[in-house]
Length: 451
Ligand SMILES: [Zn+2]
Image (cartoon, rainbow, N blue to C red; front, top):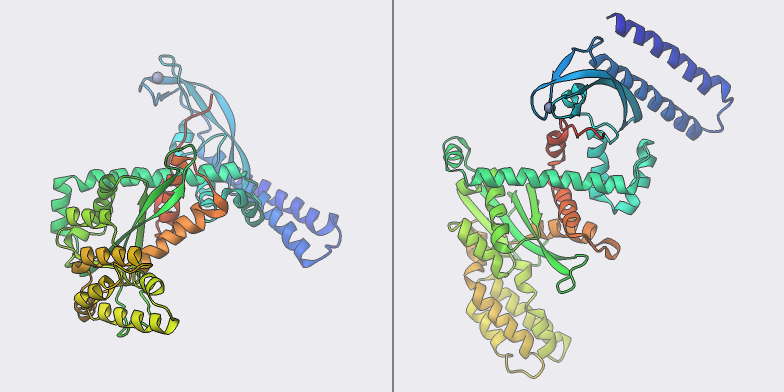
């Protein structure tokens, strides 16, 4: 209590000093904005004072002679108080704590750093979380400046990039744990016994191209994206009516991997949502072969639906290539769309097949016939509508757009492979409302002492 009373006194004096500087010495402020800025700086200084004071209170006044060495477990001996600085959300903060050296392995350590997850010489976990969040939203080149404007804490673009990637790396380690769990028979049985079975769960898969540096042969790689979500909104009565999906409880995941390896993530993230126990599991996707192979392998019971909008995209190109006037094209498209909506795949395929030998439409028509023939089992739209299943995969499209187009493809970015994946995973976690959970995993992570 004595310590606290003393600190309180110092703090009071400091407040008086800062207040007098602010209100008296600097004279009349020029504007309210001026005053807002000045007070904000003052609050930051007060925050630094309190944070330093708190760190000082955590440290034992008389450090024990020895402390167990984190490397070998032997007794490390007390050397001296060693000072360090941390870059925190309140700016640079200095502190000092007992330093121990192990005679056996020459490893130095500070018990306080370990206890509180401090990272001497680096940024604090809280600052990492917030700069990482900024970097998951904005190109790194723009994020440092914005962060400083909002928080008054100056961080370089490089720091933001590192923090974002660290958060993405944390998502990777969580996924590795989930994958291990999803292979553990005992864990799965426990789930079966205890977990609530979701009444209706949706899964969706898609992919988008990202530009990778140094890959001469294949600079554009597929970033595969998956989503789990629920919705109670049903498709409209008519395909031209307003269409809403209103997905809730969305979790996104992504990676640059071959389909087989990505499938492990589909299964592992699904286990976290109890997808394997769902009373109704519905998968949405475009016609891509890898998607349905993975769904079949991991969720053989799932209902497979080709997204309505992807399916209709195959119709118009045939009309524009084959038919002369816009009027003819529109009439034809309307008819084929209606047949598709009504699940009359025979009529759809027959209409397209009429143009497979057409001079200008061969390519589009052949492609469409193949597509509808391959996927016709997944296009029973009237049945899906009758059961109230969603048939639009807008959720995954939106995920792809937000992860890839809005963040990874900005300004023609070319990515180093690991940075690309980690930034994508950080953004997916942010979009899934997982940021706090990922940050919490890093909160007690102290980093090694720089010697
Ligand atoms: Zn040791």
